[in-house]
Image 1 (cartoon, helix red, strand yellow):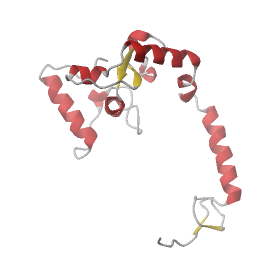
Image 2 (image 1 turned 90 degrees about the horizontal axis):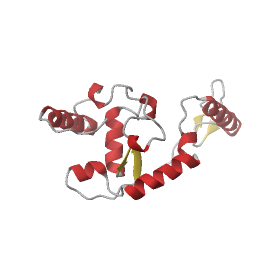
Image 3 (image 1 turned 30 degrees about the vertical axis):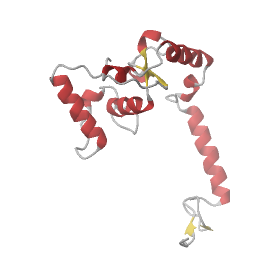
Length: 160
């Protein structure tokens, strides 16, 4: 294996050399504490909701009643659903525990939908996939452009 030289700790004004990880042992603990403290204070944090009993039960019911991916079914494919997805994202005003706001999707369709609506990877939120103008060489751009063409042709891509 190639050998890499030791680097200085990422903490400002710390000159300790480390092999990997970014921080020396002293500053790694402090950085972990700071990260965990800030994470608990974040009002936009969603993981509390997705681990709630109410959400888990609703997710199970959704996937039992609709075991196939809704997007794949529209395209004529039968793919098992693995994700209970909010049609209108919670952050955009969708009802969190309303069964009519849920659809069953496979992980591939869910990832595509999330990328296009901008709910992941720091993309603009709020306008849905129509407001995104991704770089033309990315996979998201190709999906965006094909979805645009489908909509212009009168084919509905997502029911939001």
